[in-house]
Amino acid sequence: MAVPKKKTSRSRRNMRRYSAAYKLDPIAETTCNFTHDVVRTHTVSMKAIKEGLYVAPAKKAKVAKTKSVQA
Image (tube, rainbow, N blue to C red; front, top):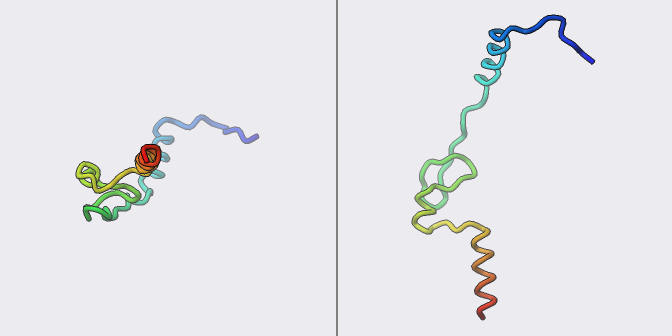
């Protein structure tokens, strides 16, 4: 098993961690399919949810079940 010969100082450790995080890609943005607002990828804008334009898949299944039971 590999073991370091010397202790790495806090400064040196943090410099390494900072440089790794600094190289990360910027957050990708896209547009909401319902309101055409700029949002992060794979998300829906809050405006679409509040206006009722978007219904979550779990809610769709629940609504379908209650309709089939009532019929």
